[in-house]
Length: 165
Image (tube, rainbow, N blue to C red; front, top):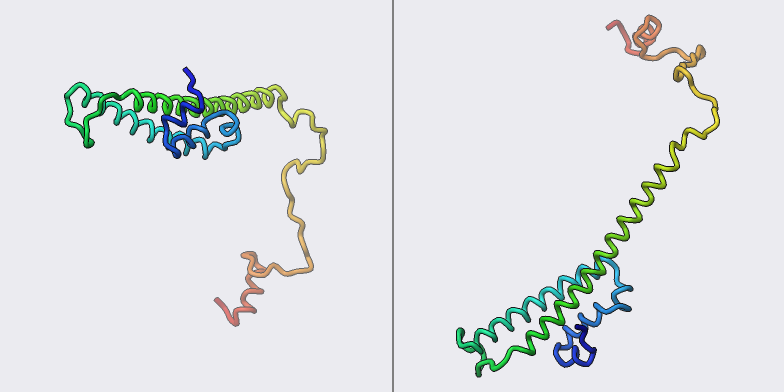
């Protein structure tokens, strides 16, 4: 059962009413994923607290627990409704987060199907020049091979080094 905004304002304090207002459709659609996760966390904390207070009040009404305030609780219907409102808000926001997650996953699956249907992109490529057996060295006869391990390189290294090795 949905509650009117006036009923929400009556049952909730200002911070809780602001959180529940953010869980409704126009504000919820504008929120990003990080804001939705934070909203869920805050709403769950408030819901758990209201649920615990309601349980404590119910035990006080039945006479199973000592009164926590100056006078014993006579009814827990208000806090029970408050917990129900907060639980409904958590459910709305969780549903929105799951909807976004499933939408993202379905888009990823669809993109994968389209990619696989397109086939190999190299199959339609025209033949072009290739290296065949790889690169071939181009010798440069104008420069001496400095430091090379062949006979000429050793001679050059000996001259540079100042003597035999």
